Structures are given as structure tokens and as C-alpha cells.
Image (cartoon, rainbow, N blue to C red; front, side, top):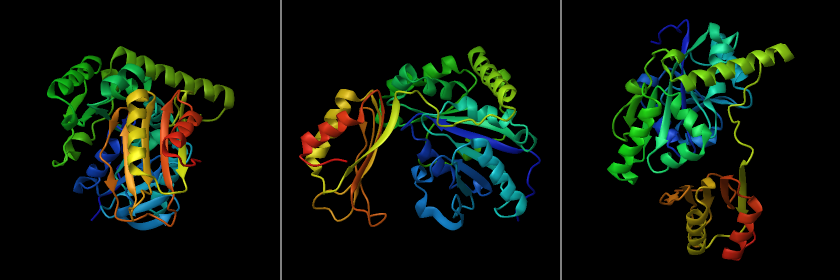
Length: 350
């Protein structure tokens, strides 16, 4: 029997840079019995890859999962999304969840998300920050921290830092990364990601997020963000709408589409050469390919210079058999990649 809804529902924020493994971590956490009465807010439902767990469609943005968790899509403003979910709980439209997990996008500055919970005049009467969990990639984490301000902020505000992909690097490399994050976030609990252990109790404890325990720089970021909220309230007489997806202007996302089946050898060589030469500018590449000679699609996934092994899927997700490759790049023009791919494969690319 479900327990009563708490007076202040704890909010756990799960963040981490592109390709750092937060989606994989979320999938593992949602299998834990401890999270059966949890609601999850994510930016794009498809990115989490939970389609095979769907149990019941509540409405166009809300689904019930087999674990008992509730999963919703954030479409636009985070504050409005939480208010709408809260209203559904009050009306009995969705189960009485006792915890809310917010998964940010990989490019998100976490400060607007955190201050939304603490500063929104409606939400702060019903919700409180539980903790912040940040995934850091043992392969690319050092580079992300060097070049991406969002990655640095994500790790600096964390209460739990989960080091992922340690099996893909050396012990010396992993230890160097751990030493670095300990220096700029000495209060965080550092956890090595595990595919076999249930880490939900350690990661999603209900301790209250405390800005006072953070470094001076993090406290300054919070003060600046709260000042931005007050300025917006003063000028617009309304609560500001925080964009959880905001990022640098030179970062963009685009999709390349093939109408004809792809030659796997030619595509593989092109992708390898692209990431070897422009890995720091290709923040992420993810796609589903119609490979010549294959009856089912092949999924590809790369993060900077790291290309994960291709996954041969069992079936196509729908009737569309075109190859689609999504890129997130920093300062790399889509037209340049399109021309290069067309020249290399000899095929038209949209």
C-alpha cells in the first residue's frame, strides 16, 4: 500500500554532459524497488530509451512504467511542467509519487533548474531539493571539464559524482579524473558506476541540498542566478521561465538523412576519420542506419573521439526505413559535414 505523499516532495536532479552515461544510470536506477513511487521529468522521452518499459499511456506527455514509476516529458518551461505534474497528482490523474527525479539535457546549465525548485513561489511550498547527481565520463571527462563550462558547473554543484566508463580507460586515467573533481568539489560523494549493483539508496538519499556546503564559486553562481530571477520578476512582474536546455550559441543540433541503404564500410571509415580529426567539435553523434544487406537497423553512438560498438537492433521502430544521424556539434557547420559525407559515400544526404 502506498504511503502518504510527503509534505515536501524531494527533488533529485540528475545531470551530466553529453554522452557521460546519465541515461544508462537512470535506466538502472528505475529498476530499483526503492523508486517504485517516483516521478521522472526528462527533456525528450525518446532520449531515455524506455519505450520497451511502457505500461500505460496516461496522456500525450505522461506514461506509467512497469517499475511503477511515472515518466513525463518536459516541453518548454520546467516550472510549468512540475506544476502540471503536481496538479495531476492532486486530482488523482497520476499515482501519488513520493519523489521527483529531473534529468537535464547534457548541455544544461544546472543552476536554473536548481533555483527553479528553491525560488518558484508555488513550488517551494510543495517541493525541496533532495540532491544533485552528476555523471562524469572517465574517457572524455577531463576534456569536457577543460572546454565546456556546463560540464564544470554540473560537477561543481553535485552532491554525488558518478564516474562512468572506467572500463574504457586506464586506472591511472580514472584516478586522475577522480583527484581533479575532488579538488574542485571536496564535499561530493564520488561513486564508480556499476552495472551489477543497486546504487539507488546511495545516490538518491533524501538529504537536503545545502548551498552553504558548496565552494565559494558555486555559492556565487547561485547568488547570480537568484539575482537574475529577482531582476526578471521586477521587470516582468512574473516568474521567469528558465530554459533547462540553454547553452552556448555555437553549439547546435542537426540531423542528416539518407534515403538509400548505407554502405557500412564507407560510413564507418567516414565517421572514424571525422571523430579523429574533429572529435573536440563533435560533442555527440547518435543514429539509426539502414545498412545495405541488413534487414534490421544498426544503431551507432559516438562521443568525441570515442565510438561505441554498433548495436544491431531486432527490428525497425516504425515504417520509416531511412537512415537518420543526429549530431550535436560545437562550431562545426552542418553543411560541411553533409558535403563530406556525400563525397565519401557517393549518396545524397538531406
